[in-house]
Length: 199
Image (tube, rainbow, N blue to C red; front, side, top):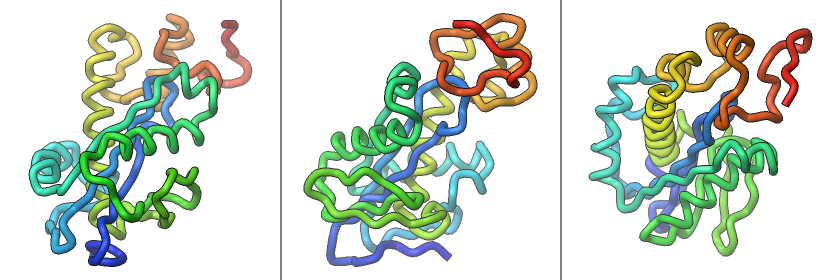
């Protein structure tokens, strides 16, 4: 069972990212402040939910949240600063965009770059423990999926509508045949070592 918050007397923002392990596309993160008494029987870690359920929950989260926002870091920025720093930067950008300043941050995972002026707690597998982190995981995942679906229309060969940029066999085969797009992460291992690309 998920928990509402650590301390009901402060505004806690849950933060999570989506797209960290992808070969292509931006990394997205969301920050969500929920009312202390918020509950929902279906809300959980977005990876445990069907696509249909995630999209059903998104408008509920957006309507019920005290504040929510999404942050994005481009593939070019990922290549420049690395994916871990990019994931934290995406969370910072989401926090920047909140119209209510939180008193505390609940971060999914075991590491985080501190956000200026706001204390944080890292929570391993937090998207399965706290509603606010689970809500952030749903928003980050669905908004990133929408973005990858749009890119898939421009680059249909890579099947991004299906794989969302993750390293599936079909995605890697398309890279081998077609080369890379401006949305591929050049610092990632896009192909097995014996099939290396030249940039």
